[in-house]
Length: 432
Image 1 (spheres, rainbow, N blue to C red):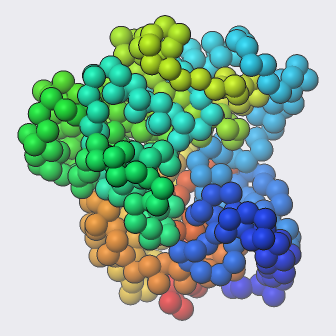
Image 2: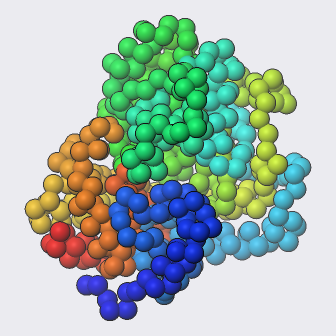
Image 3: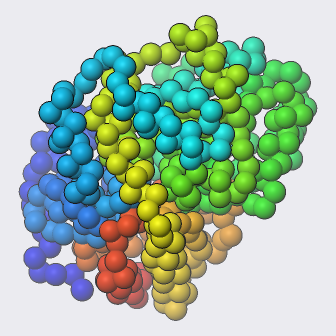
C-alpha cells in the first residue's frame, strides 16, 4: 500500500536545481528516469539493502549502485578499511603494495587473467582492451553484439544497450563514421551471424567482445553452446575473445561468467565489485597479450588515479567477504526467490512476463518471451514497466529505472525484504 508519508518534495526541488547545473540534471543518463517517467529520486544515504532519499523515504534497493554493493551498502568492514587506508593518503600516483594484493586476488579468481592492469572505470577498461586487441592482432575491426554496452567510447556506441537503449538514442552524434566503420554488430545468441561476419571480413577482425550474460539490454542469458561457439570461431580466425565482466565479474560466481560457464576468453574487463563501491576498472588476460601494454610493451595506456589506494582497499575487503563459505549459495537462494516470485505474481495477475536470475543478478520483461537478444527485449511493454516501476517506488522498492537494465541483490537482502517486495508487486500488478 502507498503510505501517506511518501513524498518527493525535496527530491523534486533538488532535481529542478540540478537541471540548470548539469546536462539533464544528472551525471549519468539512466538516472534521469526518462524511460519510466516522473522525477528521479535524490538519495541521501545507503546502508545494507536499503536507501533513503532526501525526503526520508526508505527503499529496498535492487540496484546496489549498479552492482558493486554485493555485500550490502556501506558494509562496516569495507568502510573501516577505507577509513584506515585514508589516514595514509587518498592518492599516491605511485606504486603501492595494495595493487599487488588485489592483482593476486583477481588473477587467482578469474580463469583467463594471468596479468592485470587497473584503471578507473568499466568504460576505461573496455576502451583500453579494444586498443590492446588491435595492437596485438594488427587488425582494426571488432565484433560486438546488439544491446551489449561496453562504455561510451566511440567504437562501442553502435547498437549499444544501457542508457542508449533507455533513451532510445541512435548511434551517438559526435562519433565519426570513420570510427564506427570498423565496428561490426550481430544479434546476441546468433552464432551464424558471427560466422558470416568472419567470412565477409577475412583476416580483418581483431576480436569479439560481449557481455557473457547481458545486463544492459535487460537480463539475457547465453543460449547453450553460444559462448563455446564464439570461443571456437575466434580461435579459427586468429581473433581474440573478450568477456566484458564489469557486471558479471565476482557476481554470478567468484570467478565470473567464465567460471560459471566453463569458457575461458583471451581477455576480460572488470569493474564495480573489485572496487567495493569506489571508482575502479581493470582489464587482464593472457600474459603474452598483456605484455603488449606499456611499459612492458608498445601499446600506451595510463591513468593518474589508476590503482588508487582507497579503491584497492575497498576491493580487497569486498573480495575477502565474498570468499566466505556459503556466500554465493545465499545470493542465489534469495535472488531465485525474488525472481520466481515476481514471475508468478505476473502470471497470476494476467500479465505476460519472462525473466530469470543467476546468483545475485536478475531481470524480467513484460513480454511473452523468451528473450534471446535485444530485438526480443524491445518487444516488451515499456509503458507497463513504467507504471510498475512507479508503483513499486511509491511502495518503497527501488528498481532500475529502465526495462533494459538488470537488477542486483546483495548479501544484506533478507527474506523479509523479498516478502515486502513481492507484497508490493502483488498490489501494483493487480492495478496495472
